[in-house]
Length: 464
Image (tube, rainbow, N blue to C red; front, top):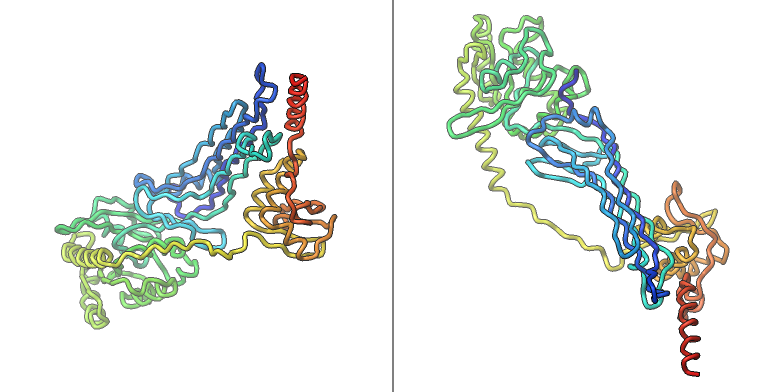
């Protein structure tokens, strides 16, 4: 059974916003008490949050579809709908969130760090919120907006200070077991380690973590063996330790060739050239291994490596290796502490940035823009008054004036939105767009006029 998963596809659906309510207050002696429809509640968000107790993405391997609850609709008497419940997904530190195409959306490192993956839809306004001096009793409300639908990839990159890299059966698992309290699986066959193992190591005043990365072989950066799956776990490590097998029995292999092969794979993977390296020649407890270590040591020193001859079985040389790793880790941490914090640049929207675009196509004119498309989603097209309110909003934004400027004629097809989910209607310009004169808003509630007429008649009776 799979117990470690470091890459999953996640399908997140945020909650939809609740619909607003269209309601008129009706009480005794108050025939027209005014609008009292409440707003709809906001839909729930999908939130990723780092939890130190979580070490794998296994939960999302079994449950890749996550959905938040919808907001509740508003009600009369100015009662607003309840908000949808957020879904907080716990992820391990080191989780990278990317789109299907590979664009990075978030890099979550550190306990408590969070990222709103999918935003819940805003609730629709009730008619009480839509009332104005010009529209005293709206007979409509706005529909809640749909929540975001995001398909992303979660990729775990182990957060450790030191990475042990090398060929299968080089002794990496034995070494991390000797250096820390970690107890990885150890056996005398290749690819024993199928998941990265983490161990905490103490050297003097320095405490650091060591990752045992599953064995790499030539071609790992192109997907051969297990390398491509686990090379990502090397990216965050500040120090690389080459564990070389000095007692291998495979023909055609020696520590120098192994080092060259692993360095070639790391170079092909990219992004690791600046990490300091240490070479640990393992298995010197075997006579042939000690002889091989003495033969290759001068060549490794000549290449500029710090070289340590060790035995994970007898712990010989491990103390010196541990303190060497701790020194490089402390140096890397000090460099990070003294880095100048990057400035946060706030870029407001340009004053001349277009809020919408109108493009003429074969079938008519297409309107695109965040605000027009959002307004369309909020409109109940079965309500003529709501459609009139939409027309007023578009006219105030300047959409109708732009359509006239581009030569649109009454009855021309106008599409608002993308080709997949556009709303298409036959356009008829408003009075404001034609003459730029003042006019009452479209969709004015007729009940207001009826109420005013009734009051005028009552007053005339009393005057008599």
